[in-house]
Image (cartoon, rainbow, N blue to C red; front, side):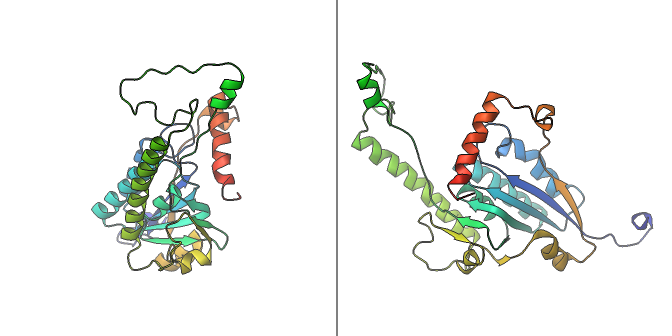
Length: 265
């Protein structure tokens, strides 16, 4: 009833936004700017929050989607003058750390996996398999680079060099983002931007996080015991609620498990 009494001060509220899963442009349950945009906007604009808390559990994914999501968070934080605090659960690696770096402060669990500031491109080569089975690959292009890194043809040195250059550009963008967001906090460790990962307090020592702590005690200490939490998250479809999965969802799940498995999770 206290909230309806005139002239009484309301307890501060914190918007809590869960960012959990692989970052990709499509697929159910995956993080991307299109699906997260309305949730992020609501988290910053509804109820005049004292802060926005990000609960992050992501092994990474698309660098573009990571950038779009992070940029949206920063734009709204600056427009509304609202601090952002990130709390890492199992992992904030690669694109997951890009999202964490969008926050003003980052807290981790003592066993959280943090870092992997690098870029990866993985594929396969099947040209020998095709040759052994008498299958001929026929490719016709207009533009000499149109069939770059075709998995059914032998790898070309010039294609590898071109891909390495592309990955290098994206890596530099990632490094610039982290340096800007963590200015004055990062260590001088030469392995910081090599794709290496750190656990819990060691990530704090590297300047990749600000402390070891969990969302409720940290925010109660910061905003008082009466702080209220408003949870924002994507709603599941009826099929997902009852455990029904389509083939595409199953494939996405396998890919997601593979991403988490890279970090032993």
